[in-house]
Image (cartoon, rainbow over all chains, first blue to last red; front, side):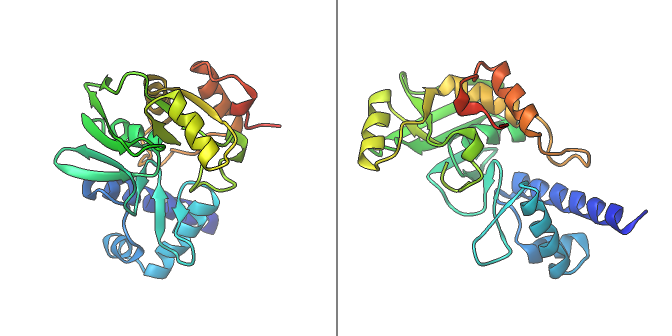
Length: 155
Length: 73
């Protein structure tokens, strides 16, 4: 195995752990937590986080090497709260909020609010079906797909 | 990508924040997009991000075909 192959395998293992942690704990892991779990150094994990961010698999927090987003999961609180299996997950946006029950493969409730007036809005997914949403409600994508990565925090 | 009670609330938000109108669609369509987009297990070793062409194919499969959804030049 070449050094490049080893690095790719390590990055895949870090990615696996990031998602496993997000699914079971509600948030992507901090680098120190991932390092302890993977029996490697925090620097090695942060380097993998950086490579995964360069490959647009993760989004890192500004000015630091920790994860901000591992879509559809957010590492910080957001207005999109997904409740499933007795745990709360935060999602970066409406699309991701609906992605959480898909990734978990479980029923879920999404608590969100209207981006305009702040009125509380709930969505419910059961058995792989969206069974509850407010009549007439819509999702708005502000930026075209080609520009999503110009500022992925605001799309 | 934000959730709104209605198209009217989208219009109001765009005006308030001086944002150009993007694309909006019923939540049910966004659910189908989430099902298609997040269906692959990202823990799998062989998982990889879709190419721009593959993204466009996903969008097209759900009838998102306007230039807004184009990722390739």
